[in-house]
Length: 424
Image 1 (cartoon, rainbow, N blue to C red):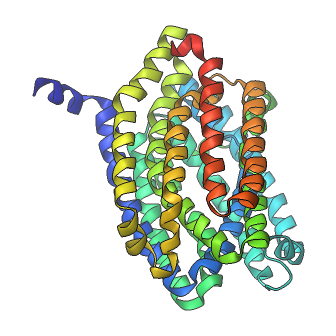
Image 2: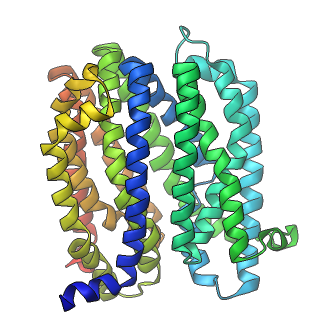
């Protein structure tokens, strides 16, 4: 009992508990949203939504310059130095704002081109890209504000923003999908994050008066140079990753059918719900710890803290998910999605290996190991792409989830070898 009491009093447990509440809420909202999507747009519509999500992800990565993890690291280091803090806040805010506006122009004036690239000539959704052009700057700034809060150690505020964002997302998604079906689902993807700006702006002002911190004379190019490493990392993982998954989905549609592509999007959506819990804990708690770990021994403590306190629950959770797969599909979707149950095993195997490797991968961001990150990321994306194409041809829809498991088996092995001094 004393052991449990000690665990419950730790900072990690308190943050994890609050974050768990956020994730449970996200799961509940995801359940409702997924059900609405399944009823109103079906597997084929879900495949189109997946294509647009990948496209949006690429543009959001460029718009934020991939600075999120870098901001967490450097803000954590200078949060007690007001002048340095003002320099970082001003530099990232001004940079992201300018880039977002430039990208918005590309989105707005080339909307017909983007529509044909993402959806094909059969669909006329060009106005969705124009709407995205207006939403992008607000969302980009919101992401930066949340990263600053994270770096300041305002974990609770970050989780509150996530909770409020999930509630806004539910209302917008249900309303838009009910009214406009597939078009509504596409619009919900871009409107919800943009509305989150108001929430994040409110919470950042509880930390410090942000508008007084943002001044052009505080802009420092050396900070951009420091953060450029994170842009290169994000360029590979965010943009290249999105393009790979977009290509795989297009290959699925062309080779097997749009229904099957929708099944893959469904299992990916289910996967994203529980992966959210681990990724948020890693970003909120473990990334700042890794950033300030100065020795291999310090890093080892952080690694094994994750494996001892978080990972056992990951294994148990995935076993429960697998045993409940038929119930999960019936609750989240409709009978038309039952073939998704055949994809669970290899998807869960891949996700287990993915979550085992994540804590090691965060060391790339914490210690700014740009070259190593780019090489390992391109290597894993290559495995994903080529193994997916090959296995889809030889096995069918199962091939795409088997490729997922293969990728993260190799990725975990490579990272374990690379970080062996800090891990063992």
